[in-house]
Length: 228
Image (cartoon, rainbow, N blue to C red; front, side, top):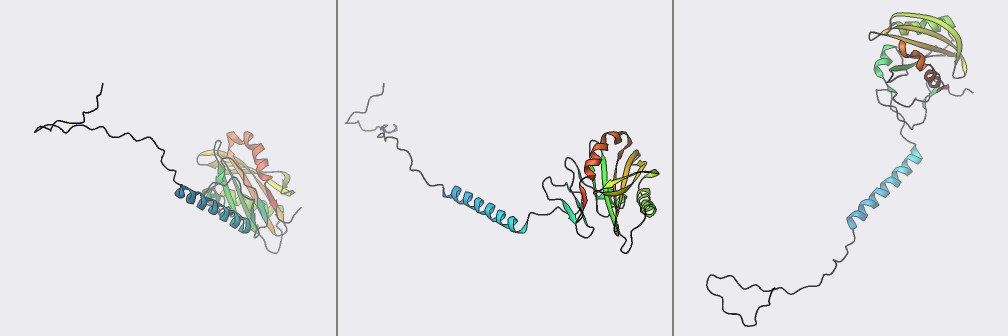
């Protein structure tokens, strides 16, 4: 057991260690709390930034979707609108994203999109005939020309008329090869005043039956501006 040193210590001999002296015990006292000014300033700056951005977007509106360019379509954006071509389109969700390559292939001047598992595509094109409304034969002929530039060995047949954007529409069923795979699809043709729209959808022939219901829902997302 440790014994405290005697009051009168003997002189230290040469070469010996200095005598150990037990330090006085200091009672534990908690360190004074410091105000976390750095954290307070950081949190305050974040709150201020969020408030400023909220006020800005409330006045200016949230950013619109990028022009077609291969970017994934955001999941929470207003419907895409074009005043020039007088339409509105609600982009499909899931794995659908914009596809510039397909847009070029089928001469879709407005947009084209693709999904995976299974692979499928949609494309939207329009043309303003300025002073006239093309008849069914002319609108169908132009649809076929757009498809022939991409699908090898294209075969097509007119289908019973249907509707698009709650308006009467012509329909063309087609099949042809693309990327060494047999594809099947439909082109819905809508003429409204001087504007004609071609809404085309296609996928691998083996997936056509399973995609039929989805095509219908996607077409329901297309509408004309100012038309009830």
